[in-house]
Image 1 (cartoon, one colour):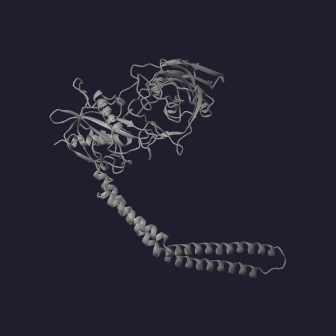
Image 2 (cartoon, rainbow, N blue to C red):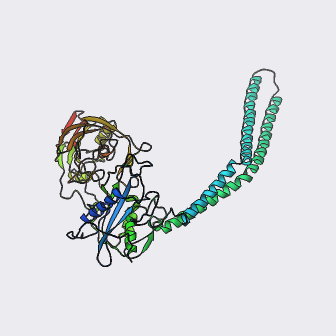
Image 3 (tube, rainbow, N blue to C red):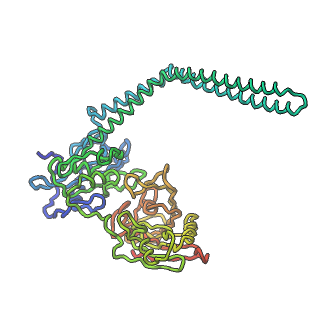
Amino acid sequence: MISHKFQPFKTNISGISLPEKFTFPFYYEPHELSIIASTELQNYLETQTDFEHNFGLDATQKGLIIGKMFGVLVCQNEVGELGYLWAFSGKLADSNHHDKFVPTVYDMLDAKGFYKIGEENLNQITSEIESLKESENYKKVFKNLEKTKTEAFNDIQNQKNNIKVQKKLRDEIRKSNSFNEEELKEASKQEGILLKKMTQFWNYKIQDSQKEFDLINSKIETLKLERKQKSAALQQRLFAEYAFLNQFGILKSIGEIFEENPPAGAGECAAPKLLHYAFANKLKPIAMAEFWWGKSPNSEIRKHKQFYPACKSKCEPILMQHMLDGLDMEENPFENNPAAGKVISIVYNDDYLVLINKPAEFLSVPGKQIKDSVYQRVKDLYPKATGPLIVHRLDMSTSGIMILAKNEEVYKELQSQFIKRTIKKRYVALLDGVLQENEGFIDFPLRVDLDDRPRQLVCYEHGKTAKTKWQKIEVIDNKTKVYFYPITGRTHQLRVHASHELGLKTPILGDDLYGKKANRLHLHAEQLTFIHPISKEEMTFSVEAEF
């Protein structure tokens, strides 16, 4: 019997063809059925009274603002009827269970479940440890141990200093005509004997204090070991409980998938929850999509109602290594060469360097699977060139001027200019919206999103400085053409600075990571000014954008 989580479409879908293949979850255009299912979910979220959660969409609502990723899975039941499932990532309104959404594979919030019981047991051990540490007896013996160590150090150090002073005095005496060498040697010997006896005395005192301390501290260390062992066992059991089905009915845990070291939150995303529920209830997956609902986190770029791919670090191993096994799925676009059929044009060439115009969707350097790149093409063009060649990079999706060195000496000189930021760069971009300001300066640090590479995050703790000057050129059909003058050269710097709330709040047209897809990313490295490493002449080159 199919659960009520499988809902029929409210919209008339009779004229819509099914997709030929299942959605490739890491780069996709949502199918029309997925869009309708998502719209019906969004309509529910806008009007529902089943739960209270502050998504940051209502300025009057109180509580912590937490935007949320939601997912829909269009599927077919055993009699061929179409419907869909809904899911959310993580928890919603402090709960893993809501009437219209598929449940989590294991509910960590269940008060009667082994995880909460085990967690409470760990908390009790921690409380006992803290209680022992706060006891008067513990504080007393600890203070006594530290005091004894301090007194021992000071006493022994004073004797060592005294020995040095006495040695200097004896050296002065030896400079006179009247002295008894045997007496001086004996004095030195007695000082050494006294130091040895003092050291032995204090070692005994410290040992006595240490024993007293160890007697009570051993209880704490025993409890710490018990807590560590129970915590590890609880974690392993949790990894085993998070077991997901595939279409063949095979269960595989995240412990197995991630070799007992899954990232935090693995298995809690919408996509694996949806597919697991479908397979458990004999529903055939047809198409899938995920969208963001609510205010973006401060560090990320998430747009309300916008579709996003499944995350890489948490979902890709679960889905690609197990859950999607055997499904007839759309091809993986990351395995296709985006540079196939494209040519790079030479902007300038001499014996020392070459400037090229890189097309959009063209790798600067070879990737893990695709070797075709600017590096490979230039190497083929100039087989006698030596050195690293690539002086700087452009994102695969960005077009424009790149400079390459033909020998190591030229490479080092050009690299130095980039490091010292004496090379001037100008990009032109078309933003997907209208800017009111005419110019400005953007400055916030960036780092890679470790859970979802290659996306970048704003991070003031571990991020690297990223600075950009910008200038508005014109507004065309509700799109703003701008110049970007990057002062630093961080990965995706201009894309994030354009889209983020701390920046221009307006993504570059066609930005499939931080905005919406279009025919291409409308970002072009238009102009480059540098000092020629050999002639020392300042050179400026410009290539107009093709968008």
